[in-house]
Amino acid sequence: MAFLFENLKVYKKAIAFADEISDLTEMFPKGNYYLVDQLNRAALSISTNIAEGNGRYSKADRKNFFRISRGSAFECVPILELCKRRNLIKEERVRVLKDNLDEICKMLSGLINY
Image (cartoon, rainbow, N blue to C red; front, side, top):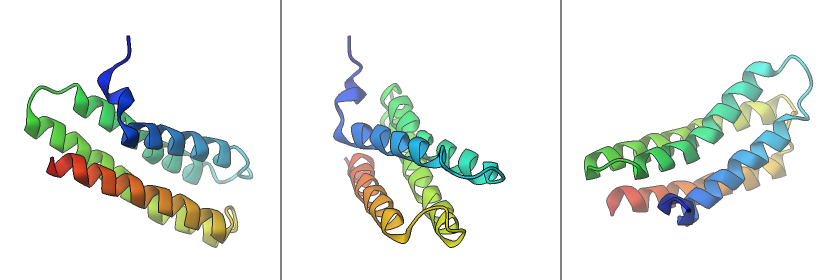
C-alpha cells in the first residue's frame, strides 16, 4: 500500500534531491562534518515534512508542515554557497542544485496556497 504523499511530484523531487545530496557529501573530505550533517538534515527535512504534513487532518497543520519543508529548502541554499566557496562543490553543480530547490519551493508554494 502506497501512502498518498508518495504520488506527489514534489515529494518525489524532494526525495531525489536528498539522495543526490547524500551521494555528493559522501565525497567531502574529512573535517567538513558540520556541513555534511547540516546539508543532509536540511535536504532530508524537505521530504519528511511533506510526508508529515500529509498525515495531518487539519488544513492549517498541513500548511504549517509544507511551510517548514519550504524553509528547509531555503536552508540548503547558504550551505551550498559555503560548500562552493570552500571548493567542495563546483559552481555549475551548485547552480543545478539551486535550480532544483527553486522548483521544489515553487511546488511547495502551490501546496501551501491550495
